[in-house]
Image (cartoon, rainbow, N blue to C red; front, side):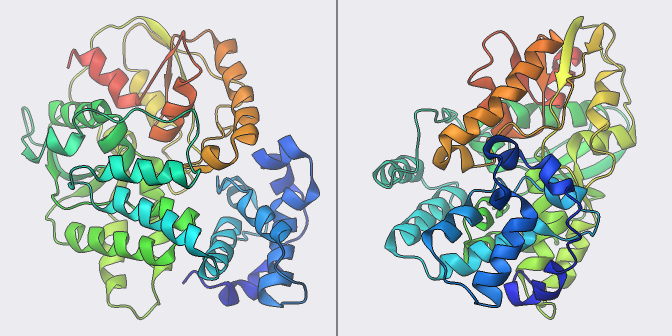
Length: 400
């Protein structure tokens, strides 16, 4: 479970190799050793575990000035779960927070766990502005959310090859329902029956990032109870962060003896990112010609699948006329990180600037990425390129 005391020993496994320093987006901008994972972990150990130093505002600032991009964890030679430890520290700090943080959590829970309540987003947005947790760059909400456009079961076209449940994340549901439409249409077109479960809520990652363990537990329990009861071959999601929630975070939200753990194991074993699942299954229908140059931004939260990096590349390579123009650093963070860019605007913009320059150097007309927050945050500045989900690109090639 995500309890700091459980990480006391593993923190000391850090070998100070410096891999986290070389891959941390925050350090690469601030150039402060205190913002490197190894330094953060030492600080957390001293202030929150051993309690040999006070928890000052600076301690809180350092713990919160982290994107939770997982780069440090994925590149750690000692396999220290840096992002889990930082998350656990935020949970402990949040437990001691005041009314403002409590109200902020309330806003997030209303938005993310009560999708069907009319007016909730409007009211939550109003409260968010009062709490100063917004910025000039706010995404435009879809006029009709995805869950109001498509529901139930979408039949496979042609020979039925698989039956999957589609976990629709908040980004797709609220911001980019076109992604949801593309996922359903492309899968069905390739012989996959798609079940869209009713009652699904947020995956819990935004709550975890804020240190709201109870909120994350509430979300995950709701989802697991629904998904575990479905008769499907696989569960797919279009968002890598949602996939990470189920594959690597869900079991850590509860004690090992919690009865939900058995269902979590069942669900997590079936989880796939949508392009990864389709690439593994193989296309049943060849896409039509669609000439043009595209580049692929790899989302940070992709480490839970060894094949998700290559899946979009392989699928889109099947489109006649489509040309992949690689960035110099396709996996470099864009700086959005959920709500991080709202609270650390200047830092996030600096991180994004490198990605924007890299994209422009490719000469690509389109940018594909699975992460809806990356899509939004890059799209705000990219005026000459269209940012879309890989399956949105494939859907266009199919004429869907």
